[in-house]
Length: 181
Length: 309
Image (cartoon, rainbow over all chains, first blue to last red; front, side, top):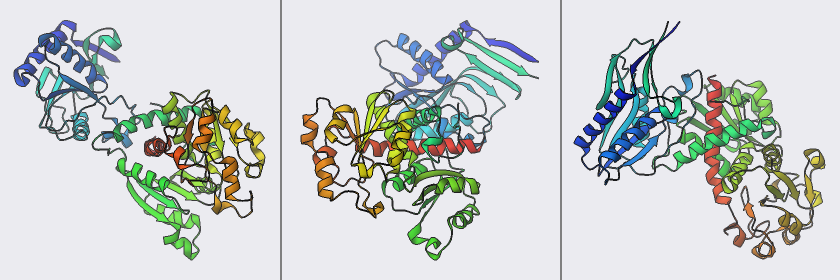
């Protein structure tokens, strides 16, 4: 049996993105040494939305951004049933001494973020790395990794799956909780 | 993600066009990684690779080693000059002893054609053929075709002439298979004595005149005269070969089209290629070397993934 329920709709996602953008401005001010990095594939959509909102709120400031692919940095490459399709690595700047804001849609076990931290270090030694996530799944971490900015925190069972759908791919913005029983 | 249809890379003959396409797409990703400040990824840290080189090699060996190191694989190297092969040990015994040390992938260069096919049938490891006698050199053909794809956007429809010693060249055979699978038109050029008998069965035409060949092609892949493989005299002298088939700037300047010059190395400067051509804007020889690492990373990565599936 397949059960699905919506935990965020478009309006709630928009509100969360606006709030997250204000929180980023509060911390990073003019984004002089800050770089927004979307984690491929799904974090890139959120990163684009946040960037759009920031550009609207700070029209005179050029905020640097890029997309990070972690396929070759994962620790489960040889253990997976199906190989991962590598995505586009779209980073044309050095991270040396920069403040990196890593953006992903869902924080679950923390393993993707660990791989992303490895990948980030390949582009230089950043001053700081923060994590922005739309959904923070509590009580499911395999590693001591916590987000800096959170859209919504949820408690979900380990057999439940949280899916963030974006208009660009699925035709609608929403967050679903799917239960496989 | 799709996976390779083969368990080993023994030759281009055994690959499907979709395999070549997958290798190229994966190499695109690795090429980006090779341009990062830190060029190493942890992808193959669970994998052990043995490089067995029973024949001399510079760039292939270095390129494989660098590819393996950049994928974080554990590597061991063996060359025939410093091993028990000198004491009379068979290839199978040598390899089985290495496999007892838990090695996952073997990169093999061997003077005997078919050595890697033989090994793949007799040992439990992934085999990558790094050149087997006069048979195949698949990673060289892949990096050559990849360099053409990079230069022109695609390989399909391109006219490629392979010039030189086709008879003794594993690069030529692998290139013919690879380029034809990708839709290019391939012809060869050189003295008739250096052409293999089975050329017609490969659907490849032969130019004996260099000027005609260069006027026809978009890309000229120039091969080295393999003096170490020639027990007979296939042409009167190197000087005569150079006069009839050597490429210099004067010859290129006479052509109506700009052509791209490739060479798998090592170059015999002044024999098959003059320095003013090898170092000119026509040449993509160093791009080939650079692409070699990305292609070999892609091949090793995809074969290692195949193992776990």
